[in-house]
Structures are given as C-alpha cells and as structure tokens.
Length: 536
Image (cartoon, rainbow, N blue to C red):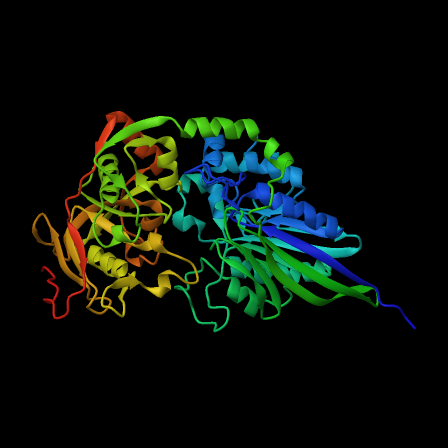
C-alpha cells in the first residue's frame, strides 16, 4: 500500500499597521490590544507550531502613529516598523498607498533598510515594463513546497497623493496586473501555492456580489477572486476590515488595521506524482488578547525613540478660550461645533480664500481641551493630508452638499440616523463634509438629490454658474468619497504642508485660540418644507 505524504504550510499576513508598534493609545497612554509588538508574540507562537511558514506585510506600514510621525520628521536612522519587521523575519512586504505620503526619498530609504523585498507588480517607472521596486513577485521554497507571492497595489494612488511624491511612476490597473502575472507565474514558475497580496479591498458584498461602492477601481478584490483563475490565497487590506473566509474557492484574509489581528491561512497539501496538490485551505484571524504580552525584543529596537516621541507629544503648543472638547462625534455633523469651525479657520487662513469644506476624519477625535499639546494635534489630525484650493461653481457646491446629505437617513422615530451604506462594509464617517463661508440647510425629509433647501453666499442665493474658490483636503479634492463633482476641477493653489503642521503653526503663532461658531448651516427633518431655491 502506497503511503500518502501530507504537509501543512502557514501564511501569516499583517496589513495597515500604520506605524503602530507599541500597544499604546497615544491619546491616553493606556495599553490596548493592538500593535506589531503584541502581534509579534503571536507570530513567534505560530513559528513554533509551523516550521513551514511565510510572513508577509500587505502595506501601509510606515505612516499613521505619532511614533512613525516622529521617526520620519526627525530622520531616524531606521524606521521603527522596519526595524521590528527585520527582527521578525518578514519574507516580503507590499507597498501601500501611505508608503508614498512622504515622497520617493522616504520610500527608497525604507526599501533599502528592509531585509526583505518590497513587491508591487503594477508600479513602474514611466515608460518601463519593469517594476519600480525590484521585483513583482517572490518565490519561496518551504522545505520542498514552492510558494509564489505576487504583490499588487491599488492603482488609485494618483487620485489622492501629492504628485511630487510619486513623480516618475506609473500605477497600472491592479486587476489587469493580476490577470497578466498570475498565469505567467503559473506557467513559468509552476508554484504549488499561488498567493496574491493586494493592497486593496473588496468592491462588492462577499455574499451577494452586489456593489458596496461605486466601481471606480480603487478596490478590485472581488473581481480578482471571480475573474482570475489560479489564485489560491488572496491577502487584502486598505479597507481596514476584519475578514477570514473563502470566495470563489480562494482563501481570503484582511486583518483590520493598527495591528488588530494577523490573517492566517493554513494550506494542506498531499504529494501526487511528484507534485504537491492542495487539498484544503483554512482562513482565520489571530487577535491579541488583553493578556497577550508585547514582544520585548521587538519593542527594544525602538525604546529610546518611543520615549522621545512621548516627550515630544507632551509639549504644550497653546491654549483654548472656551470649549473645543468633542464628546460626541455624531453630534458635530448635525449642528456646527467649535472644533470644526476651528478647522475651517486654519484652512481659510493658509489658503487665503473665503469658502472651506472639511470633515471630522476620525471617530476617536476628542477636539481640544483647555491646554493643547502636540499629542492633541496629532491624534485629531493623524492623516498627512495637504490642502487644495479648487475653483467650483454654485452647481458643483450644491451637488457636493447633496452628496454629503446622503450620509443621513430618517430613522423610525423621525430623527436623523447614519445611512447604513456609510457603516458597512467599512465605516466612512469621514465622507460627511461641513462647509464654512456659505449658508445652507439640509432637509432630510426630502429625497436624496433634493435635500439642499437653502444655499446662500454673502446673504444671497448662490447662482449655479457663480465661481468660488474653495479649500479642502487633498483626498476630497481628488473626488475621494464619491465626490465626483470635484474631479477635473481647476486647481488654484496647493498648500503642500501636512494639515497637522498647519494646525500647530496656527496655534503656536497665537498662543491662544477662541472657541466660537457662526452657525452658518443646519440639518433638519421637516415635512412639506419649501422647495429649494436654485439661483439663476
């Protein structure tokens, strides 16, 4: 009787770590069950269980935490996340969109200091057919089992990123890149296991296949599973979702963000006619618990840098007259709040215009207390967005307000509630905008597309053809969040300094800032309200 040889390999994947090495809430310094330090303990446990193991990061690793910001601002010899990943023996990493936030010099330094390759098949130097960062895929031999890992990055990066940061690069369609490379790797390398690590997410509901967003191409993971033969495992990210399941026969994972979890795929294979054949795949998420200790060896590589970061965060930048404390993020979207008014004041001053569009970017924002530290600024303005001034018409502004009004629906008791489309599959509270420099009213009792019942500029109805220069963050100016009316509009000015730095300059230059609101907008639910006035 012929014996059957069976083997199991394990694939571990992190994604969207966003600079979170320590299990620290940087607002309070409390310990949380996040961060690569805690995941490192799980990784070491898995290595003991599985001698045949592959460890991959799926992008957005160097940006997002105060530690990462301090390291980049002060030109640390090695980024703390890269030092930790080197120590943990990562096999490969994929470039995410946030790797480009600080320009090509930073990307090159990160790639050079990594003891593992960075993969991205679809990012190329202009006019070249070769990948910009060395190789499109990795071949790994796990004790005789041949594994291929193709790295792919969402090609939507030029829609958001400062063009100076990606100068000289071309971003090719991720789905088409996978369609090109998977059969090629299958044909030329003949791997036993084919993995695609894609810094992008799912554009459709995993159960119904119905679109969950406008099919812009930002996320294409569903199509990859449905349309590309030969993928065994698909690692995803970008959307910060927690997924471990199967789709169209492909094992898929997405491990959240900030070190919430590790995606694990176990692949069982049997030996048949001198080939390894997959017989089963299991996808799951491994999450640190409150009792999980952070790996001291991983943390020690950046201990001094963390101490300096904490001291830097505690520096006082200014003070507030009145209250800018934000206890209920939802409330500031129904009635103007002094903290949002403050964001507008900063944007208007540095842009030199009269109209501003802004959003509360994080549900963890607490606004400002009486004393403002750098910690307060960075935890409220964690994204390295810059400001853009667009020339818009009154018609564009009305269309943008109608898009914003879609954030709400009327609940069973007649009060506004968040539209479920902004909660699943990914929370998108940051896609609700508030405006300064115009006066407007949104009536949620009206059908979508007809909710702007008041729109004035300087006290008179805003004509559809009138042009105004409007400042907003770079993500929104690119049309991000389905604000398609902003795409292709004339760019009047770009302020190429991170918003957090502008806020710090604004506060430190004054010492004191005052909490105030002019209540130029409101949200109502009024049946039989007057029809909206559209100025001619």
